[in-house]
Length: 329
Ligand code: NAI
Image (cartoon, rainbow, N blue to C red; front, top):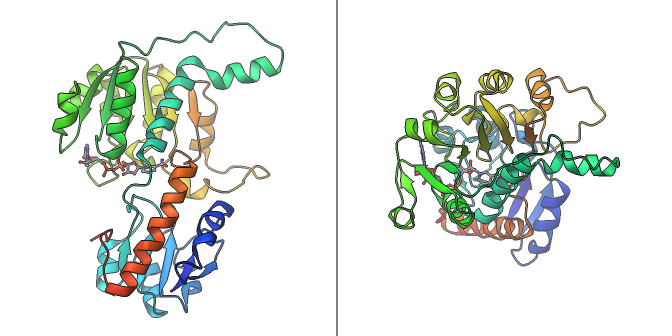
């Protein structure tokens, strides 16, 4: 099987290369993102493999169809960057890795909560400079705090388990509540109640037209003053401009982002020698109570190994049978 691997960063190479022989795969490593302008690079390959910020829109799909591509294999869970209708019209299959390590993402979300709360990022740099003062580092006990979890699928569920271990009280909202979580003590409520009652709010639902900008000026208005918001799901769940306004008034006390609305222009690349042109992002970086990581929540050894193995299995299964258990329709 011939695979065009777009956005092929070193970690992708390291994870997939050892599997190539056992899957009889010829992999072409392509550094650029997939987008309409680069789609023709897939010529001569049955499958393309892409990641979260590749732009699999109708134009890119048409160009891939023109050069004989049969399959788009996402090496991630989310598929909001794929025009599924265009893929279906073009007769191109789409597969994904539905679960590779919910623990990786949930643990990163908890890490962000603790870092923001206890200001590890600030104390680390202080101690390096020989400043051992505690002023400005006052945190709070996690025990007894109300954490609102939006989306209790694979990642949200693990987060609930971890936070229950901390002694937090968990409120949850999901369009399909999980009875086992309810039995474990998680209280399902409607979204407005989550916004009103949570000390910490963590987002774990997919990006859909319904969830886009769910955190906006209106929902922020109903939240507790000083709320902590964590987003490790998808950037556009949050209206960044509204969040900046709420940071300025102190409505938001802490903000942890592993994803950002316009991240495709920034994340996964080294821009340290350039002037960042995204003024909204640069404003976010100026707040002492904002912690941003560059879409790394998934990035553990276990997750990456699972991503590579399942992606290769998906491609082999689809090319042999014309479908896959992990097909996205
Ligand atoms: P999942 O599919 O297991 O769970 C998603 C849950 O959200 C489901 O229970 C679903 O019923 C619920 N849901 C759907 N629409 C909703 C709505 N309008 N309001 C509330 N809940 C809703 O997905 P999983 O694996 O837990 O992943 C969650 C999200 O995390 C993914 O959509 C993806 O965007 C993101 N993600 C981020 C990663 C990162 O590295 N930062 C890595 C992996 C996933």
